[in-house]
Length: 76
Image (tube, rainbow, N blue to C red; front, side, top):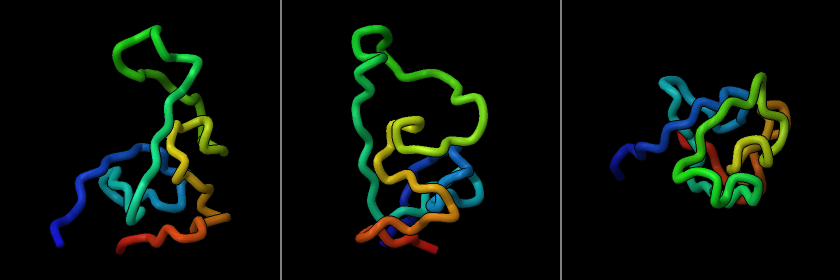
């Protein structure tokens, strides 16, 4: 299997890996109703560490201390 190339800078996530690589075996990213129609691309800053999936738009997100999510393994 080829090395996946999903990059993420949310280092408070259980699946965060060195080099800003996501180590989740699968991910789910959702729409953010607050930004739909405002830009062609999601750009912004959380201003600290993410604590919930809503702050990242990634439903796979889970804080390091609470991971892993049921049914989603971490690839190492």
